[in-house]
Image (tube, rainbow, N blue to C red; front, side):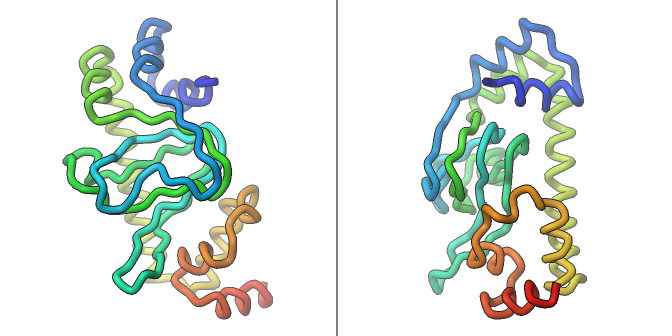
Length: 189
């Protein structure tokens, strides 16, 4: 069941069976039904997670009660509220399953223990943080410099296998457009 996680790690660093055993001991398996939360905004519960099955949206709930979707995450991807996880601050985001999902999570305490037991995981950690920073920067550049239509087309190209799992409300929030405008974009494409 944990093989996708091992493959993800071993794409960057090799693990012995003993090292892998430490990883498995520190990871927690969680099943979530569609619309269940892994994390709730402003809570003190933050994890680093690897998605085995399913899909999640990471979003904030604005003061006026509307959602702003920051990211979608799918199988074989990592997700984390970075500031909350690494600095033990209240969570910034809600992380909600948008379909029935299975995820492996690790707490900050267990990650620290893993670094002591398997020091080469620090190298993997650095690669993950670099990748997350690049994704955040790219998302910002896209929002600032691309049209809604360009962002939509790139999204459906990148996630063609998952776009049907994302409802129009979530997709329009991610793109920063109204439902009506998203419908117009879809008609033109």
